[in-house]
Length: 137
Image (tube, rainbow, N blue to C red; front, side, top):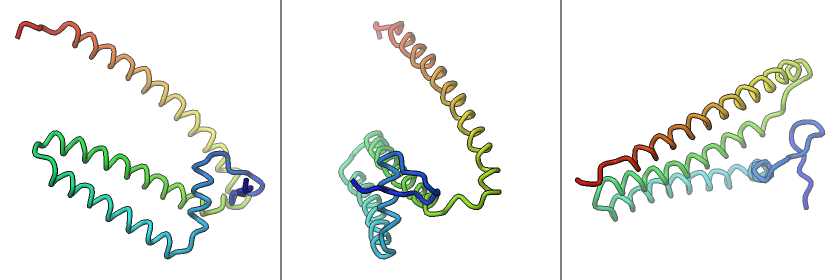
């Protein structure tokens, strides 16, 4: 296994995504350009194929949402590569960034907890509405 060093001094990459970002950042400009244009062409080609192969709007909307969400993951990967390409800065910048990072991690923990609670409640309410519906119609 290759030891991937991050641009952060002395820190290792911790996930497979970070390793993939490292590999992507090591590519030359032409390879990155080829990947980017291929993904863009593939996105619009898939949307066109779905448009030509589907007859109703609901199927087209569902397929388009699926393709768009998959390509949103590619865009998130590209943004991660952009961020990891830069170093963290000097000691003064890092002393400011560390409390901000800790605060944002705490905020997201609370935010995701709240979203999870609301999602479970909404799913339960939708289920109760579904089982109490009138079947006589």
